[in-house]
Length: 193
Picture 1: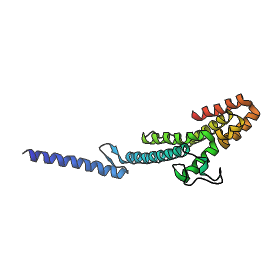
Picture 2: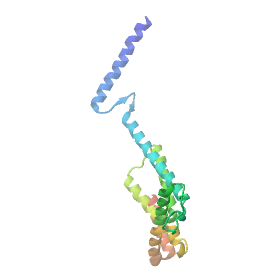
Picture 3: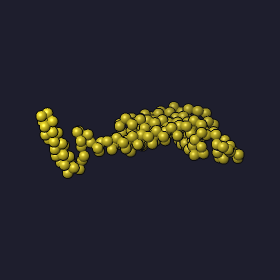
Picture 4: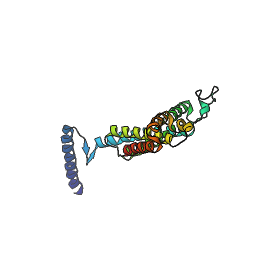
C-alpha cells in the first residue's frame, strides 16, 4: 500500500519538473531547481581567465626575479648558454623588455596579473574594464616616472626604464624635483582611484 502511494507522488513531481523544463526551454534558459547554467558557464569562464592570469603573473614574476643581463646578446657579445633565467630565453627577453621599458616598476605588472587572477577566481570581475586598463597603464607610467625622479641622473634609466627616464627628464626640466614629484604622484593617485 505504501508503494502505491509513493508512485503517484513521484510521477507528479516529475511531471512538475517536465512542465517547468518545457517552459524554460521556450524562454531560452535552462534552469533546474533555481540554478542557472548561464551563471555556471560565466563562473567557469572567469575561472579560466583566473588560471590564465595566474600563469601569466607567475611566469612574468619569475622571469623578472631571475633576470640576468648575461643571457642576452644586447648586453654582452658572448651570452651565456644555457640561459641562466629559469624561464628560458622567452622569459629572459620578456624580463629585458619590461625592465628596459618600465625599470623597477615592471615588478608591478606580475602583481597586477596575480590580483586580476584573484578577482576572476573570486567572481569579482571589475566593471568598466577599459577604464581600469587605462588607469593601470597610467599608474605604471607614473610609478616609473617617480622612480626615475627619485634617483641620481645616471641611475634614471635603470630605475625608471625608458618611459620613466623620458618623462622625468622633461618634468624635471620644467617643474623641478618637487613639482615633478607632485605631478607624477597626483597622476598615480588618480590612476588608483
